[in-house]
Length: 189
Image (cartoon, rainbow, N blue to C red; front, side, top):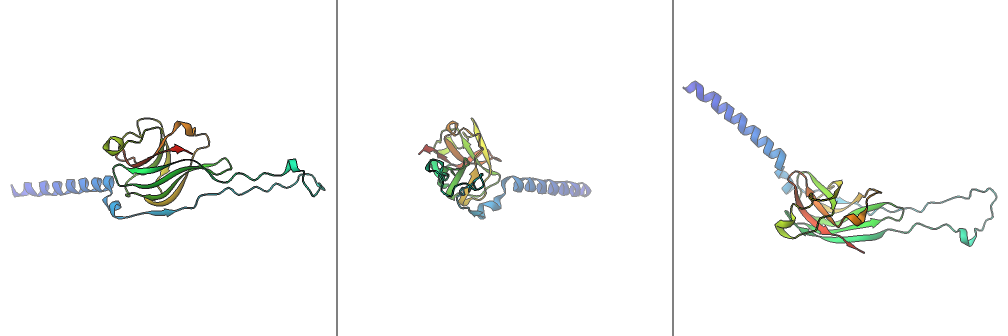
């Protein structure tokens, strides 16, 4: 019977290693001790210089034809993060850059790192505590992409056709475990 134990032990070791590998892949525990800091500046819209199309046009433009500079960045909505599954702090803003482009900006973000973190803008109500952890995928949401870093300031371009009146909150969403790390209710400015 000693010859039977060796294959059972070897099989158990192989199975144990496979379970450990899958667990490491899913949970990525090393991310709990590593931070990714991003410090992006708010994008700006540079004024467009338009040259006269008429050769030999008068040097002085008419007052009615003075070129208008695009409006600078303007905050449309903002909110402050609350903690859900992991301690989360910072603010979120929706900023119109003045050239038709809108960005979602995270400022002073401080949360845990984790596997498969995304930035979502959603129609869900932000609820404190465990009740609010899993509500963000129940309704409408826009996935703005992978969280660039768990600390710092970062920008996410909003689709030009996004109806921002349809969305009222932002979540740092762990897509792997369907849970919110933290969320912010957006208030129109």
